[in-house]
Image (cartoon, rainbow, N blue to C red; front, side, top):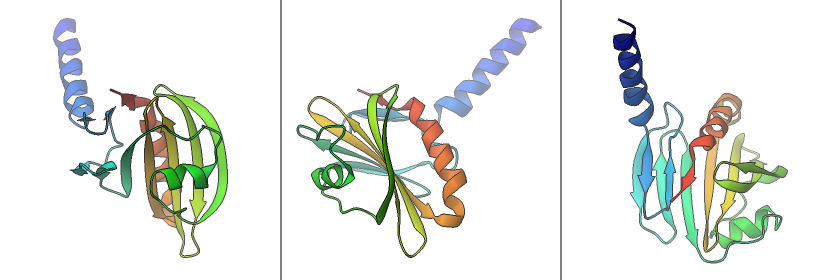
Length: 153
């Protein structure tokens, strides 16, 4: 009986946990987005992009990445993006995927944006999440928790 319960639990974990996974050779990542932010589409680029429900995007940019401490404007410019509002905070840290820089922005219209910069040797990945202020806190927490699943291929 115990073995059957364990088998059932493993099967349920695979169905719920593994079915949400996203893997892309084009982006060079493997990632499990948070519940409710399922994969929608992938664009070859450049830069290659994966779009998810709920305002989540992964962007992979080829070329030597900026330094980790280069700052939000330099990182975003290297990805072909403008700052999505006023910078509220920036910090550095580490995820299983490696060293990261984290930026948080706010716009006058009430939209907040979270950006994670994950540099590699010959490319870098941006994880970008944007949501209205009223939804941002809970959703950005889910996005940040999901980043433990981000792996470079």
